[in-house]
Image (tube, rainbow, N blue to C red; front, side, top):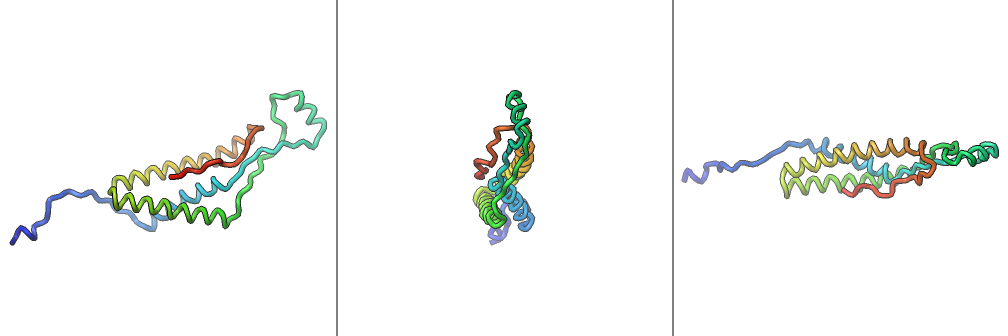
Length: 146
């Protein structure tokens, strides 16, 4: 009879997450990815001076003067995309946590941390690169589907 109440000696792995904090983290990833998908950065050359056009026509290896134009979708589109991605990322994490365990779920959080840093850096580099390129097509063709 005593054996029935004895605890099993099976080791189990455990990890503690604060759900509001982890949800906020996934929302920050979702927001950056949504901004990346809905932002277009383009170099626009200024062609309103015939003298400058002539000079830069001769100096074909130089980029004509211009500006970087940034356009974004509406706030409601970015918010809708953020909401969708937030739910997706959080559900993937919960599924991994429930079916594959805390180690796999923690690895997913680490992966998403890297994704967030990559997207954050990509957005900054994308704007910077447009000032050095005359053939920038702008936009972000494909967002991460993680």
